[in-house]
Length: 507
Image 1 (cartoon, one colour):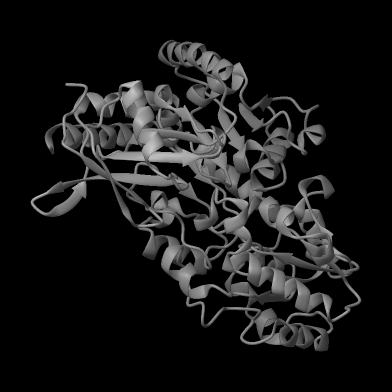
Image 2: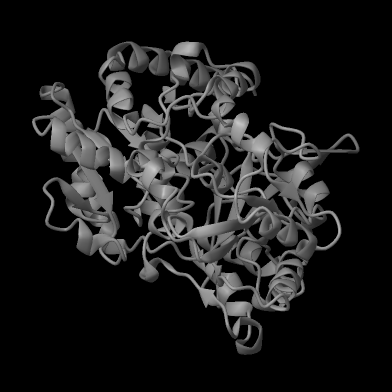
């Protein structure tokens, strides 16, 4: 039965927490969906449906027919709101009803037509020519060529040109020009891109597989193939300040087949807290650190102070008025003002989410530089940074690797620990200094040290970085070459079958 009957159901946003009653049956008829969409004052990004049973609110369970339609074809039920946001119902993997309310990710109807043909062709080729399948390499939102993904791609193209590796990037990426002349570069959203999403045997990236597709396009045939594709997670930096999403847990179908680590310290986090065995968390170092020659770094002119604060998931897609009243915006603006008052002899660089840049007015940014992708790659900027001010960013580890002092401005620590979490005690950070009263006090301490690491930080650096030899890409390549894809795919098929059986019979 496609249309499940129920007297009413309730909507709860995952962030707001309040329940809103829908006084009608849920169905997938278009006019019914339009009615539901118009009844609720939706907030980003995800909301879940509940039903009232015996006085308790329990998750709304879809019928099998509804589940199949939403799990594989949810794009057919998308509605565009008057403000340009995209709204649609979708099915969770356990068969529950949820809703997404997000910004447009650029996935056009023309692209969907290309995808349909590419999926059919790629599956046919995989069936009749199952060998010599390529690896697909990409970075954040398929819009970067600055991280470990691109460095690894360049390494294998130079040293192993006979291997079948492709790099995915968007046509409007600011990094496209520097790689467009390279062979085996694929434009995101093209027919070849959709074809390779299915054809590829392995993804290699510093991001999750969803970044090879379309942001928050979490349902559909291709999306589900992408989500379960075997992948090597190259990482951004050493794990510690930010917990990974539960899709990284070692026993999940969505977990990487290899999670690259930089030291015994980090490998212990992955094995003890995420449930990986040692083989799945090899210690290689990060590919992008191959670009860093520490002996040269120590002689470079460091004339910049970089402010780099991470984004908060609870601010996704909030309107501008809400954003400028948020603790995040107000705290960072205050720190910028405090630093400007010091009249330092270093250039102040602010590199953050575009929404933060847009919200700062001209008076607040006078005398500072808002760094964007058009100004150059972050790794090049870091070579001239004398001090990094951040909150929980993994960039702190790169600064530490480069022997640059770090100040941690953790103004919302309690909420961050509750909603994101950390693998280390944020009250006892392993290096750098933490703002407790006035950020200017921390900066004065760094100035007193002539912008050098504290001796204790320098002496214990080897605990967090096993290698400084610029050979991480070679070690990662050896890891990739020794992955038994056939065995991994057999295990994944068993997990998928078990999940389907649970869905059908555990009602």
